[in-house]
Image 1: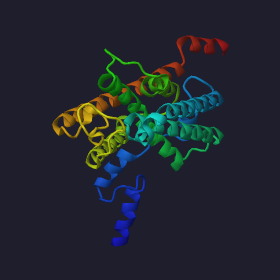
Image 2: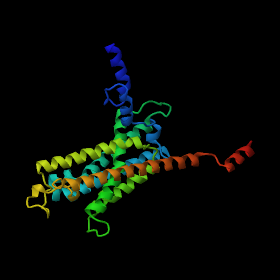
Image 3: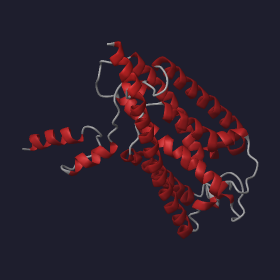
Length: 287
């Protein structure tokens, strides 16, 4: 009996390795399951030949690497190790890593015979998990920055590297999303939700350890008491929770936006691939 239970557990929980409760396991595992058609959805584009798409992904990955280096050169001398406490920089580093992994996955898919339909390799599934994070989070970072940190109605001057981190990177990722066949559904939102939860947990740890942010702030005498972002100041937990709730609402709205965007992309692709009346007439005339 125990052997049979172990066999059933393995069958239901093997896709995500995170569940161990029978009956509930399948629903939980489906939340974390990465559904991608390998290699077609990873290595082909909606608007360009396969080889051109592979080259395009390589160029985008190279751009992100170059801009990441520029961002580090610009801000590490100013912030030092405090560079790594900010959500923007977490997300920017993750974007760069993901684009490198996506290029490797795209090239791998290009070299895989098209008739070799099988489950995507684990590396590709990890890549897709990160992809599900960076797409909505790039927009969330942009929204939060231009509404809370540097209000767009009264902005202060910033350097080009900061424009890249808070706007231009998102624009490049949107273009990449539209020309790719990479899927995005509402259930994939579990990944950015986890990412957001981890970062909010980090802000609490940062508060209790009194790490500060490397520069003085107006509200506190001690630099160590300064929050990472003034909006998420756990010295005022009620206000921080209001902003936190707003951030999660914004994330849900952004996820719905991305789901709708990808559905429109796929619907447009399906209509473009459908033969028109003129094509049918030509085919009939040719017969």
